Amino acid sequence: MQQQQASIISTLKILKKLYPQKPDMDLGNPEDSLLATIMSARTTDAQVLKMFPDFRKKFPNWKKLASADLIDIAKSMNTIGLFRNKAKSIKSLAQQILKDYDGKVPDTMEDLVKLSGVGRKTASCVLSTCFNKPAIAVDTHVFRISKRLGWAKGKNPIIVEKELAKLVPLKWWSHINHTFVPFGRDICKPGKPQCYRCPINKYCNYSNKTQKA
View 1 (tube, rainbow, N blue to C red):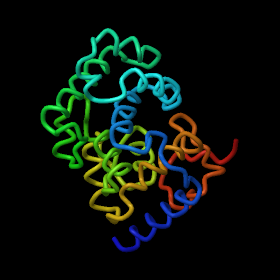
View 2 (tube, rainbow, N blue to C red; view 1 turned 90 degrees about the horizontal axis):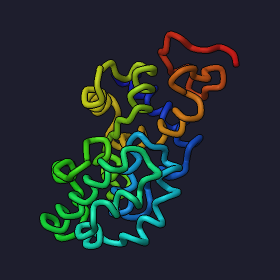
View 3 (tube, rainbow, N blue to C red; view 1 turned 60 degrees about the horizontal axis):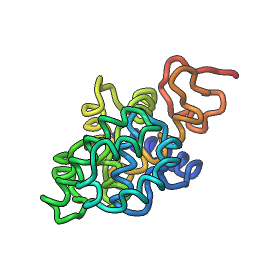
View 4 (cartoon, helix red, strand yellow; view 1 turned 90 degrees about the vertical axis):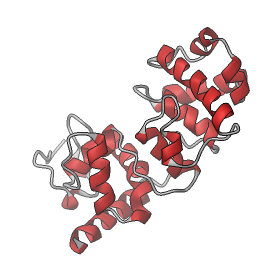
């Protein structure tokens, strides 16, 4: 166990050095980060970041969102995927935050997942980026890479999150998503990972490693 944890820490240290930048959805405050993370589901971060400033100019606070016409919210985010469903969630979310949390984004997993459109992944992203609380956000990159590395075997994100929580030291939890996302886009890709240039190749258990370009 200690040897495996030492390997995990070495892996995360390498990736942290390679990808020191803050996550794309860390927009400096809980309100913006929560909204942008909800919008980013099945949509690229670049698409969200492109439309987000205009969206916030139109709806600068929870009161504006809560009272806005649903059609207006949807029109303001129609360049991203599933915008109609997300508009419904965001309007409900704004109403919940005003009613139940005095207009402030809650800072616990228990309360965040009660909000419309917020699952464990989104909640974990907000907790780690905005409140500096240890959390493991299991998106497609974390799910794929943790299994390739041999850190997890679970068949769904919830199981993988539990496996990682048992294995990875607490202080490194948030670094998993922060580094695996850019690493997954850049090198450890879904279809054909670029193992031949991978900086953590020696720590990886993936059976179908690609040895050349």
